[in-house]
Structure formats: structure tokens, C-alpha cells
Length: 307
Length: 144
Image 1: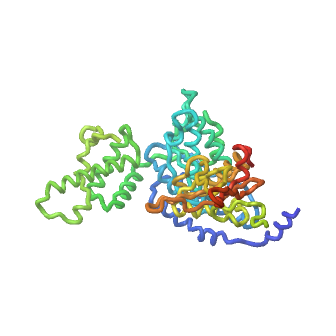
Image 2 (image 1 turned 180 degrees about the horizontal axis):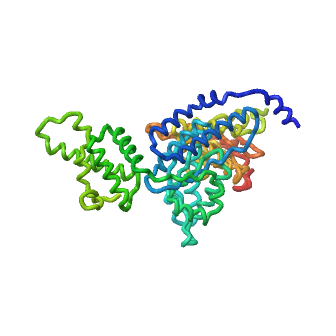
Image 3 (image 1 turned 45 degrees about the vertical axis):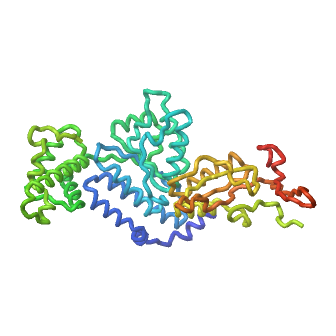
């Protein structure tokens, strides 16, 4: 009865969503996300939705329309090199700006950090990691390794149990993000239905298209003060088309490795003509020959270290 | 004459103030974390002022960013030892300092019998004084 009276009091008042939006500086982060992450439309859409939800929630609190804190535990699935870790890192910052977490730091762990080696070792280990992540984001990479169904005495189950408890009870204190390959994560959730239901956001990271990979390469090179010559860009497009059909292709990570090798060859090329003068431009430009030397072109095989 | 009504133990910071609330404890922990000090939780049922080393409740907590995890440990400790003295210590590991920078009580027993002054007569008319905690007359676990 009392609440109803309160509501009618404030029903006429209006709040400025725009002002709140500006104050949170969230646009800056979303812009940065757009600028620095190529593609990933479903991911960006979901982040926008979450940002909107948290913002609206904050306004609702001003009108004392209390609602439970939303669960923001997430699961990122996708092939290697699709940017799961990068987005998780941004997530901490975004959630901090929105006032959902207090510190916004990211603690990245894998099975080794959570699961112990002998009886009684797992619980303290998991709890220590959880305490470190409090106030921020706990990112569990390759989370499906936590659960090994073939070994019933595996301590991973104990770790999952503690995580579940914390995910439920300390929702205000930390956000848990699980990441892994799609098929393996699906199997993981099948055997841990409790985990599935406690994670509100399942986000799938799509593979990059060739054009997107080229923009990623441009971004990476710009970050290191390199650039493609026109012929090199054309060569790299061809390289990508060939490389994407091969095995062990891991999206942005493969691009980075290819560029690292091209830089190696460029350095070697410049070193070969050290007798003549070398300009600033020479030092910055990757030429077609730096890329064409890759074995991907010559015999359709990977360079020595296939990654 | 009662100089300390209730025989409240006055050791460490804030001990002359009313007991800290959880929120106040959180902010003190935050202060320690912001300075990069390692925070740990300790307990004892022998609060003699010279009893420097209390029992540790779990390991000291390094690399934490947020006080929530430590408050969780404090509450776990309170649940396990509701009638012990519990304190939070912040260790400053800076070279040259390497000592606790903060230490304050976060839990005390319901009844605190306090300390008595024991006089020992020795050579001649010399008197030696010592402080004795009434609680330690009983065996461990039965003191409070």
C-alpha cells in the first residue's frame, strides 16, 4: 500500500536517459569497441543490450522500482582466434563504467589454476582464485576441461560446485565468463545443467570473413607502425584465401602470425641491401615479396610452424 | 575503580571505538588493498599483549583487488570461532618496512574477563609485576 503511494508520487516525474548515458561514458567504450574490433556483430549487439539494461536498471532504482541485480555470467563460444579473450577484457571495463562491478579487472584462469592435485587441494585453490577475481571478471578459458566425464574421481567437479555456489550467492561481487569451442562447451553444459542455467548470456563468436581479416591485418600493422604496399595487400588477400582453406586456421591469430613472419622477411630483405640507403618508408612498408615467400603459395603447405 | 568498563580488549587500531561495522571493515580493507598490502585474518583465545603471533585463518591473501573476498573470510572465521578474538592484519612488504601496517579487531568474545596484575615477591623487598589474562586459567577452547 505504502509502495503504491510512492509510485503515484513519482509517476509524473521524468528522468533524462540521455544525461545518464552521457555521464556513464559508455559511448566512448562502445565506439572503441567498434573501432578496434572488426566484425563480431552478434557480440557487439549483445554488449549494447547489456549496457542498455544496466543503464535502465540504474534509472529504475532512482524511482525505487527495485529489481534483482541481473545475472551477467556469460559464456563465449567460438573458434580459435575469434576474439573471445579480447572481448572479455573489454567486458571488465564496460561493466565497471556501468557500475556493475567495482574494480573491473580481469583474472584469466584455466583448469590448472582451479583444480588441485590431491584431495582437499581443490577447494582452497578455487576459492583463492575467486577471491582474486572479486570486484572484477573471472575469465575461465577452455572451461570444458574442468569437467572430465571419463574420470569420476576427477576434482574438476568439486571446483565446478564451488563456482556454482559463488555465481549464485556473490552475484554482486564478480562476473564469471566461460570460454571455449562451441561443440566442447555444448557437451560441457549437457553434463552440467546447473552451470547452463546460471549463465544468462551465451554469445557465439562467428568466424571472420576474408574482408574482415584484411581489416584486422591493417589494424594490427597500424598498431606497430607498419603498412602494406598496394601489391602486398593484394598478395595478402590471396594468401588469406589460400590459408583459410588449410587446416589449423585460427582466424585473427593466424593473421598475426602471418604478419610476424612477413616482418621477419622484410627485415631480412632490408638487411640484404644494407649497402644502399634505407628510408623511413622502406622500414615501414611490407612488400609483396615478403608475403609471397610464404610456403602457403609455393606448395600449398604451411610455413614451418603451423599455427 | 573501573578504568576500562566491560574489560574491553584494547589492542590494535580502533580498539577504543565501538566495534566496526562490516561496512567500516570493508573500507579499512580497501584502504589496505589500495596501498598494495597483503591482508590476512588471524584469531586467538589468548589475547595477552605479548602474544604477537595469533593463529592464521587460511593463508594471507595476496593480489586481491576487492575487499569482498576478505570480508568473506572474516565472516567464515566468525562462524568458525564466534567466541574468539579475530583481527585483520595488513602486511606491508616494501623493502625496509616489511612489517604489519594495520591491525584491528573485528570480533571479540561475548564476555571479556580482562587481565589481572600479578605481583611476585623476589629478592629483598623487590616486586615483579606481570599481566595475566583471567581467561587463560581455563584450557583452550573453553576460555570464552
